Length: 240
Image (cartoon, rainbow, N blue to C red; front, side, top):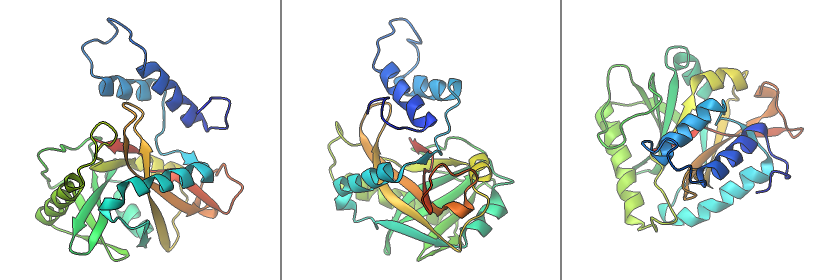
């Protein structure tokens, strides 16, 4: 993508990071991994990964999910009364981590509220600080930590069974949504909120990985950039 094309400020900064990461800086931060440098650059440039994107960009990311067709993921997830869940948790938890999970009902989402920007992706454990919800049908319901762990690990097995080319694809266990951004970008949420199943290239290594896009009526958005009736937002940081 050329910087001459229309991009949001965050997209321009992310493009700049992509260019920087391709440069060999010799001794610069030699002790740091590429991912660590990426995190540092995000902080220095004050990049908000929960940024509004153009409808065209959202459609392109949704189309890329066809490369993950083996997962049989729904095209989108509808969630009733998500505003009530947010209001009950975003003032006490700094982060919402949205996991991809799998159960007898198929691929779904799990919401984990806590105060940590990163969770252990290898040893999945929960503490009293965690509040966990599973999307069952179109409603978020609180579940026990062991059930959450089982569904997270089941999705990992499903993903691994797809034998995706590791040179082209990367596993997304969860996406981190900053609670501050929820309060900053949205005045409220509709009775039914839509999350689009999408895929985008990782800014660090360029590999394609699963993503989530929030589609929301602009009347619920604070200072929406689009003139359309619907706005589109990338949720946040794809992890690990």
